[in-house]
Image (cartoon, one colour):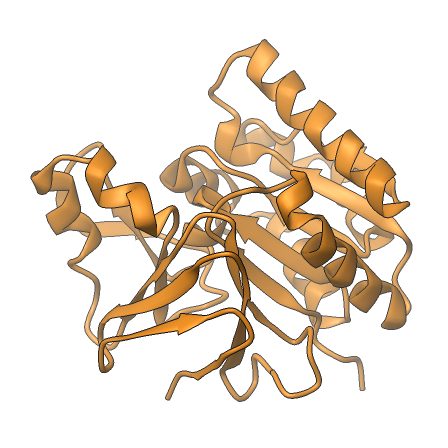
Length: 247
């Protein structure tokens, strides 16, 4: 039976030296499960940004791939029709690590929800490839993504890989950036949802270490900051190396 791959929810720092060791470990976990040494970037969350900004993300990923000794692939999935492109879909199985970077979480979720590309990504992860989402990439993996633009309490359907968790990235700075009205939207999640804050340069990871498993909802904190339980479970803060078990 294939082993489900590692999964990382990253507060910030994708493709940067601060996340180099974690990203190398994620890729190595995919390789240990029989996946190729290929680092696959999915920049969809930034799909509405400028050409220069998208090239910036691609160059960052290339630099990180060189640092960790991997082959890089940057898939230009910028709009929903791209997620039905068989050429792009065929690339997914050739990745040991698939990485969703930052941008707009609602746009990412809406663009990929219910598409063949997302189905292939989830299938490859369930067969051992590592999967990471940073900032918007982490938020989109939930079942419900805050709708910042329409400011509605009912969110946008997410990719549902972590159905009972809502990650808030950049947590140590996030609420200083957004108005109170947006903060209320973020903190109003469906019943049964645990809202977690993930500091910058910090990740919550499962399936990477032998003692953690997405099946058992056992996670471990990696990085410089902390992970905070904000709602849906007893409030707490966890630091690097500590485990969190979500019931």
